[in-house]
Length: 85
Image (cartoon, rainbow, N blue to C red):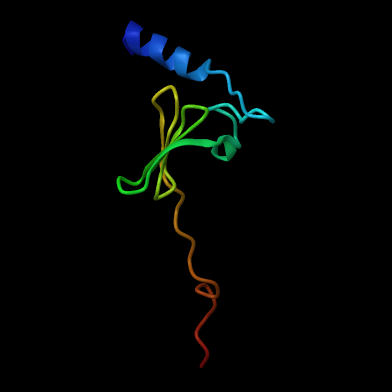
């Protein structure tokens, strides 16, 4: 990572939230609970107060640049049951 990328990543994780109660940090396990500060549904993404970009498919781009893939689809209920004879 370049020095400028490190500086930008550090700045994005050092943002101070003015919401009460404060939003979870960009690297917290509950980061998706942060307030939306910009929403672009026509493009399929939203920016949260903590610097996380959330995509419509559930994927995320974290403040440091790490991508989190969307969750795996769950099989329909009863899909693992054997067929009735």
